[in-house]
Length: 404
Image 1 (tube, rainbow, N blue to C red):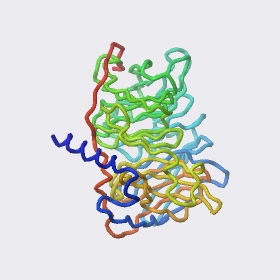
Image 2: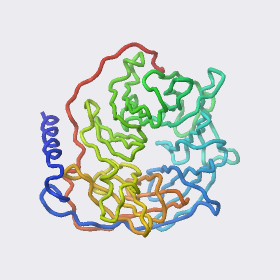
Image 3: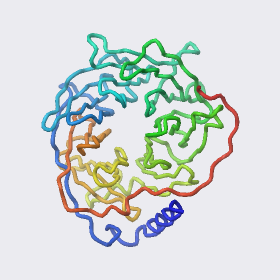
């Protein structure tokens, strides 16, 4: 019953789109506040893009890793007033398509390359840091990767490939680790799926608490959700959602709902059982200032966390006066500036949040790492920003081979 009530509440919010102006549920204008630029560092004297960022949730000091366009990966230590480069991993020989710290150890990091190799590095090791490697060379040629992810219990590794010979694969490996020590002897490919996507698998995201549930996105426009305990690929394919676009990134916003961003700079919010997105925000809606040109606006990443009080979309715009960056909230089915971010100098490529401290880390095309912190401000209404779930229908299934 509560789920149905929430669905009705959301429908009321959606029906208010465009009718009431930019204000919260109670008619009170949302006050704009700022995120303060706390720390900044340029990764190298050589011009390099930073493509992605990840971090550990350890405290009070935490680590972040940034992947550069020169194939290297740089490790930082972040404190209350310090941002220090501690290590550079330069073993990669192809573009990095993903980085992720172990959920159980701040000393273990996984790095996926476009050449089909996923390496595991122990930052405590002397000399060679690589302690494990994963790849699929069963057909004599390694499949190029476009994405990867790690299950919440760190037992299962998944890699999404580019379209290879007319097929796009989701590959699975068993990490087989004890504590924070990776067992390099167990590097067996468990299997794969190859009929659920027809083009590059651009993103994979395991459920944050359900280790056997995996969401995938592709340039074929589909977001698929798999139950990996099932005995075949089609049985595992629990939901298939058609975004009618090319999926760039996706993530879990609640236990049963997803967000995705597209290569056309649109944000879509989905229930797993929905026949269509329950909310869609086009690139033109990123222009929340009169100085913004929609063609020069871009989105970075959607953050479903409540670390800043409510979920938000990080977006930017390029103007003659410089590079704007802001956090956008979702209210009355529209986007509003929630936090202005003064001092950004670059087009931002990726972002990551340290949940406990509320630090937002951004990286981008000038090779700059920025750490932003929230300034205390008056309470803002957030009741309309919850990502509610919706009743829908499933889909038919057939038989394919499961990965394990």
